[in-house]
Image (tube, rainbow, N blue to C red; front, side):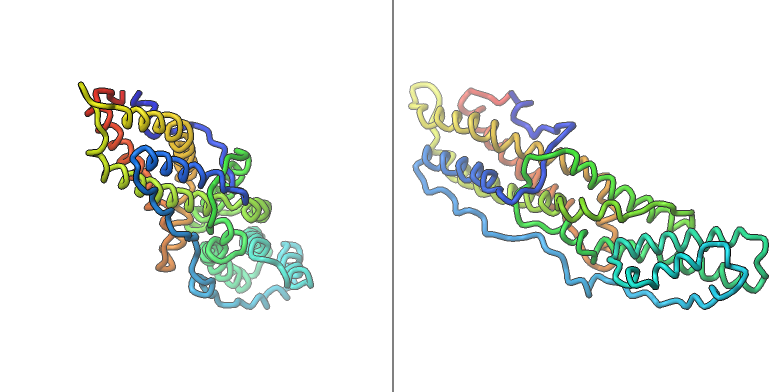
Length: 331
């Protein structure tokens, strides 16, 4: 039975954020209340409300110097594409681009500068100017990306959370993973001066529409708080649970039933999906964690997961101890 009780890691998961999430909270409330009823004690007060929030944009944003592109007046650059890109940026639509659109512009600009430098018709003077500009713009890409992750509306919504993660569509998680993978690829290429021909704008909608990472962070923390409260209540009344020869095991039998019917089928199953969601996301977390650290800030999702695992372990250890004492071991 131990394999049933330990926190299971499902290879696939299907959780999504949902406004109507009272059902998940009710699972923890019901579990704690049923245990308290059997123990004939007051149920624990629910954990205080909280939310996963980010520091102010101004605190996280990195200013970059504006660079003059006056060299674009050069006749030698008429066929290399820089005119068109800069004209698009300076158009009425370009002036109201959001951060995703502007970041794609920065990527295209760097790539076009690279293409222009491949021309054999450039004068030595213009080539030096282009090389300097290309080097600067390439060096700025990682900073632009960090600003996008930390201060764009879509990513701030994605990383914030105040409600449980609910069962939903796997496809939304896949899209989030794809977006973070693109971020990491761009960052890696930019830091070694490699060409970047990727685009982030196609992922903006799903990042804003399905704020799963913040909901996962919130859910890990809230589950941890609920489990700690419940484990503490059980531990305080451990001695009141009688079992063994010639003892009335009614209370133990009732507790075991609550454990099997409520914890195993509801709480543990949900927490296993949270755990699986985190592990599938974890490969894509470094770009987020590093972005915060570079600004002397923190996004403590990894820490929240460690605490979540510990809370689950301690809760299971209580039941293992109880079942062993009552000669009904968790196997």
